[in-house]
Length: 239
Image (cartoon, rainbow, N blue to C red; front, side, top):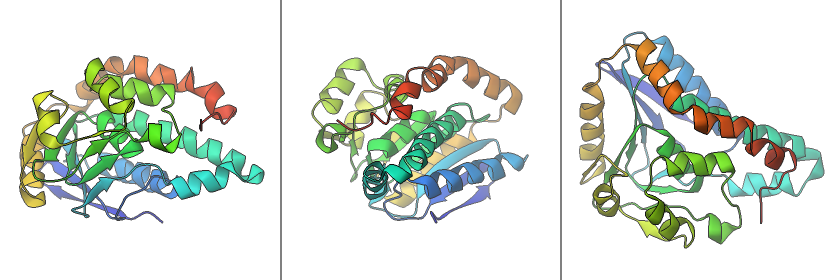
């Protein structure tokens, strides 16, 4: 079972991923969605910071061992489809969450982890270590259309091309220069403090914030129920 916990610091909920590389599989999706429900149920919370207990990794994305095992076992194909739909539910939940969501990226952020970070409203990243990377070209698993739509709302087209088509890594300083991240800090403690301080500056009503985000992200969510569907149902997820 994927481990994660959360605590409230004033009006900020800090959700900490506690599974080392924080790979995404059905257990991760279930635990993550449950945590978001619990945080939203606390009416004192006005913003959310997503952190990691591992100073080396924020999230390395898809659990490739699980996905490849499911893809190679016909009796598990429905399980794989369920997981892919579950990821889209996770992305939708973050995109439409009725408060600001800030990713405190204190380590490597790869693949599906990078997509999750892009689904957040804001990103903070360490300036002294950790890379942001889309390694799909190297693992032969292209973005689903919905994943691409999430990333395109954050990255300049030319920068996305230079990273997605090559698999190259970018650090916090480069991504700050191009406004992919909102801020950087040296060391995990300073990074988390910066993200929490930034998040604490928001004190808007959930109703208006949620509605603004739903309208802002509707075109992305529509891709999940449109272009993604035949690819998932046909399990055309590997090149």
